[in-house]
Image (cartoon, rainbow, N blue to C red; front, side, top):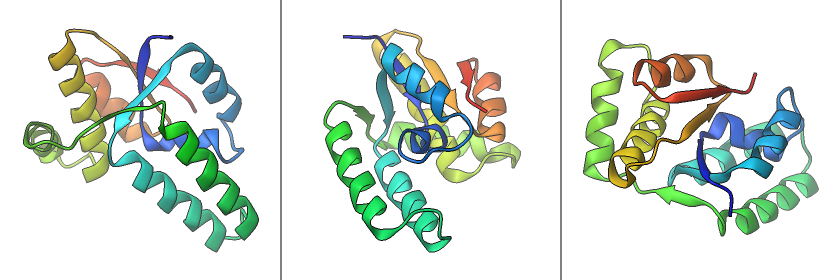
Length: 144
C-alpha cells in the first residue's frame, strides 16, 4: 500500500473533473494513499453540483462522478473534525487570510501528523491554503 498524503478538496475535485492539474493529480494518486478531512466528501459533492449548475457537467456526469467518489471513498482515510482539529483551525484563521474549510484541512493534516508521528505531504491547488500549510511547516505539494 502506498504511503499517505493529505489531499484537500481543491485538488481531489481534479480526480473527477478534467481541468488544469488533473493529470498531475492522477499521478499523485498512483503514488499516495488519500488522506483528507471527513468534510472533503461534502465539499466535493458541492463542487460537482456547482459545476452542473454552471453547465460544466450534465446530470449523467454528476451521477457517474458521485458513484466514483463513493467507491473511491472506501479507500480514503478521513480525519474527523474533532475538537482538537477545530481548535487548531480556529487558531489558523486568526490572521484573516484562511477560509474556514481550508483551515480545517490544514488542521486535519497537522493533527494526523501529531497523532501518528508521520509527516505527510499536503497536496493542494488552493494558493491561500498552500501558503498557510507552508507557514504551518507542512510539506506542500502544489497542483496548479
